[in-house]
Image (tube, rainbow, N blue to C red):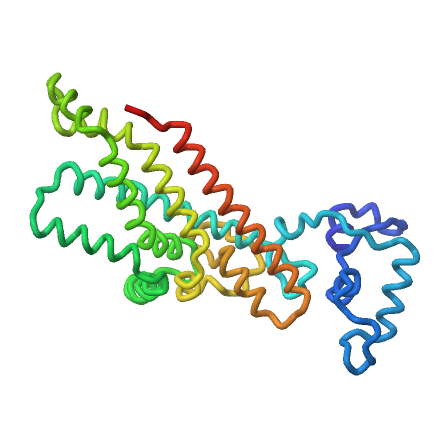
Amino acid sequence: ALRDKVVSEPSLIGQTFEISFPLSDIGDQLHKGVIDRDLPREQRRVSDEQIAWYDRLVAQDRISAPLNFGLIFNADSRFPELAGLWGALVGSFYALLICFLVSFPVGISAAVYLEEFAPKNRLTDLIEVNINNLAAVPSIVFGLLGLAVFLNFFGMPRSAPIVGGLVLSLMTLPTIIIATRAALKAVPPSIREAAIGVGASKMQTVGHHVLPLAMPGILTGTIIGLAQALGETAPLLLIGMNAFITAAPDSMFNPSTALPTQIYIWADSPERGFTSRTSAAIIVLLGFLVCMNAIAIYMRKRFERRW
C-alpha cells in the first residue's frame, strides 16, 4: 500500500504523511476478541509482545473498523487482510454471461418446438422424460462431462470462465426448458384459436401471440436457473476454477475463479484470518442470490397477464 501510494504521488518522497494499513491476521483476531488472552503463552498463537503492540495502537487511537471495500475490489491474496472477491466476481459474471447466451435461446427454442410443433409420439415422449431426468442429475456429473468433453476432447483452456459457462449452461438447460413449457401451457388455447381464425400461420401465432404472453414465466424460470448456476461449486471445481488467481481475468478465456469456488478455497485455507473472509463471501453470494430471486418475482408480478 505504501509503495502504490508513493508510485502514484512521487512528490511524497521526503515528506511525512499518514496512511492507513489493514491489520494483520493477528491484529484482526485481537480486535475481534477471538484470542483468549488469559490462556498460557504456549496455548495461544499470539505472543505477549504482539499483544503489547496491539494495546499500544489501541491506546494511541490508531485502530478503526471502517467498511472494508477491499473485500469487493481486491483480488485474491495469500494474506487474508488483503484478499478480496473481485477476481471471483468477474469470473462469475463471465460464466453466467456465457451460460445465459447459450441456455436462453437454445432452451426457449427446444421448449417451443416440443410444446407447439413436435408431433406426439414415442420419440418426443422419450425426449421429455430425458429432459425431466436431466433436471435431477447431480451437478458433479455435468462437471465430469465438461472435463471429458470441453477440456480433454476439445482442448479448451483450463480454469477459463468460458468452460465454466458452457458446463453451467448444460446444467441450466433442463430448468429453462421445463419452465418455458409450463409458461407456454399457461397461455389459454383461445389465444391460439383467435390468431389462427384471423389468418395467422402457426409460426405467426406462436411468435406474435403465444411467446410474448408466456415471456414473464420464461424470464422467471431463466433467472431462477441462473441463480442456481451461480451457486454451483462441484462442476467448477472439476474444470479447475479453484486455482489461486491474483488478478481479475481480462477475458472469458483467461484463468479465473468464481464466487462459490472462492468460498471453497478460503474455507479450506489454514489461515485463521480467512474464516471471517469466508463468512463475508458467503453473505455476498447470498445477497446476489436474493437479488436475482427478487428480480424474478418482480418480473412475474410486473408482466403477469390474467385472462
